[in-house]
Picture 1 (cartoon, one colour):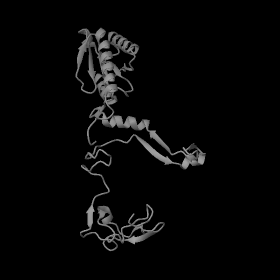
Picture 2: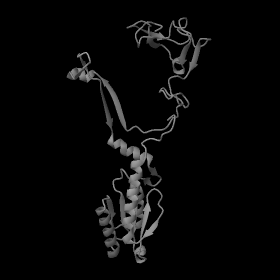
Picture 3: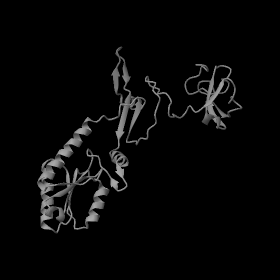
Length: 268
């Protein structure tokens, strides 16, 4: 408005006598031989230097960081809450395409005056691979992945510690089959490997729920159950563990469905 030039053609030179206040960003103050608008539509000026072509000090000049948002800045929305910065992971994009493609495709709508106008288009993209990477970044510990139940590749891991033992393998397979029949996705680890090796892989892969079938516990009439996120071990009879796992799975999925997408916190 002060220059009378169209948007994109304003520059700082010559403005100090026309305005009550000139606010200069810290980054602008360090620029040398810059190109700016010439305060005239369709014209630019090159080799503009702060201090020579416009002032950096004086009663009408404020030098500040106005380019980057910092903690405590007021929200540009109507709320006016102070902003709080949070770390986030980008998993998608939203683009405003304007009328570039709708004009080319003659995709129009009729205004209330009956005049055709091109649609204003937008698009979005969500990266499936990014969602997985972001989930792992947000849900892991020193030992590996800790999958959220909602996107875990399997809900339950059944470990047969010694698959060469007929009773161990039979019990593990029965638990696996019963859990699958209950609608859960179940992985059976019946590899002929050392127990420590299997436990390490289990932590690394990060399947949420774990049932451990071993010869020693079976001799005592039990199998072990643990949750990947806390690894607290519990013992159940083989006939009871399936119902416990099914109930825990249902409970966690219901909690996820009830949880808000974002916490309702003023200023975020």
